[in-house]
Length: 343
Image (tube, rainbow, N blue to C red; front, side, top):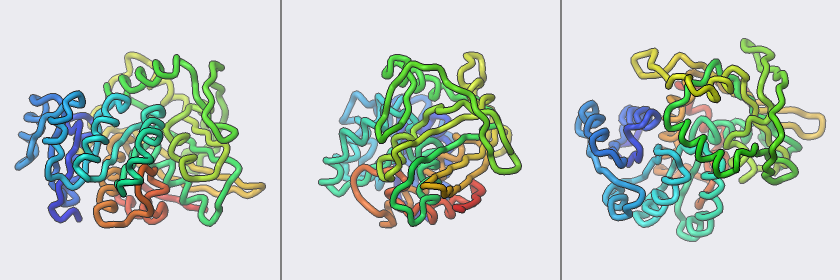
């Protein structure tokens, strides 16, 4: 449990931020609610008894310093992370506290590794980007599936989503990412990221039962192409997405997620199939559950819990699979996801 430790949540009133705040409280942490909109913070605080609200803007370093004052850690839930990650990381470094975010933006995560790895390592600081459904969960699954392998030929992460009703934040982050890559698609091949203009391909993916074989958009590239190669020797990393979810995301009139239970989760279900191959041998780890935004909260909060309790494997900027014992971390998520494998 959190035993009263204080965790600042930047972007606390956002869709994912609300799940994170609720999960922190459930785990015994004391959340500090932060973000740029004071009115939204007050509204959230009204439903969060005893919550401390600290408005802050990423273009005002002093306000970020006030927001993190006395906190034991910070979780950044405010996208687009291309704009928020660096200022909040800088504030965390000034405060001497660990930083975790839920960024799914490929370029923002690349920036975090590129700009902060040396400084964070030298300071003994802990920075974990993409500690969420995209980037974090796939990395943990692939790392657990690798087991005792030190290298593999390829890794595929296939996302079986029943639907995808994007939040406004997801839409804005997607727009920023597309602009940064000039509308091109990205893939991780031959040990490096490549940008290209070809059309996506459709293929059949053999998801485990009960989902079974489904059509997916091949190389529907997500943050796993940053997190997995950051510490695993795998020259080919591909991610795929069920076509119905990809269509939902691309359609401008798809509504935002709607609560379908008392915890605010939508009725969306997911199955993530992580497969690594070496020679003729294949290993797999699978996770399934409900609501990709809601499940990001226990991922981020479990990360903070382990960091604050010294259950980490390195310092500096590191993805989930490098920072934590992947198999043990996944087992700790059992109240929120169902696991099969590694096998």
